Image (cartoon, rainbow, N blue to C red; front, side, top):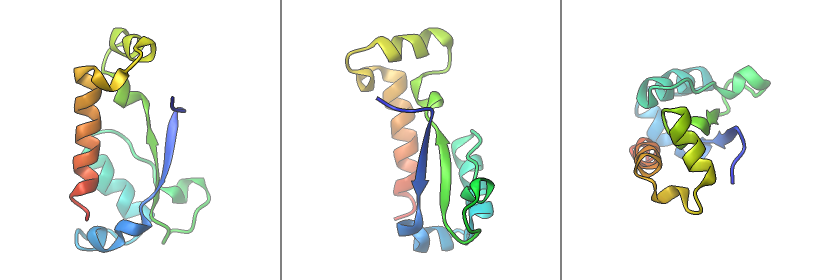
Length: 100
């Protein structure tokens, strides 16, 4: 189960982000949007301090690229077993693993 967005605090990854030139939520927004290929609004857009490394990740891209895939994902008893869901989760995981 998931909502429309996941509000993630990436403060624990601050060192890895700093090594990539990311020091605030505006830079984090730009970095993750480029890395993931989908808009990732920074927390500064939602009232957070600029220095807080928070973002809002949309969950819809994890469900598939088409209406049919998204419907199948929502109806599946184990959506993570669908290849396109597994691939999307793997890409997201790889993006965050790079920051450790």
